[in-house]
Image (cartoon, rainbow, N blue to C red; front, top):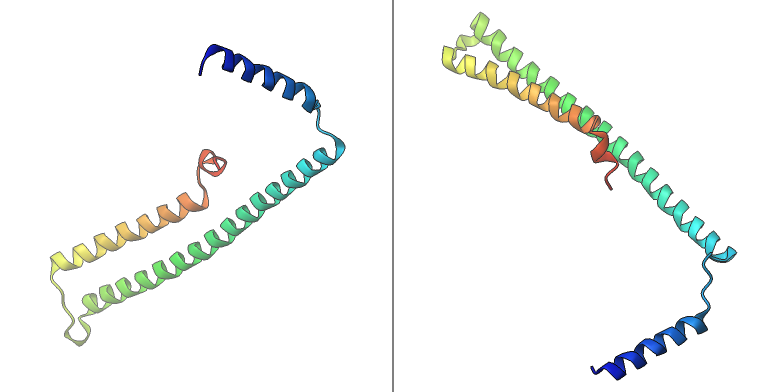
Length: 127
């Protein structure tokens, strides 16, 4: 593009800007529309937070139930091993591994639930 055609283009843009006569402040209709969309956005954010709270409660109770069931099963194995019911025996290494892994898993599930129920403030307000 040569210099003259670029100058002509700039002049045409100036004329269009002058003809448009765009006000600096929005009119009342535009302001109301903007407020409407802002309120919809705000309501969507509230709905999202409420849904997250419900899901967190659901998963927290589900993990709690799983943990209780898991502990009952392990307690049953300890009870059977301790009193040798029905000739039930397992080696000491397996017994220690079972108790250790159960303890680590229960604590790990607890940490997952706590981190999701009480996230960092930064991660909650990022979106």
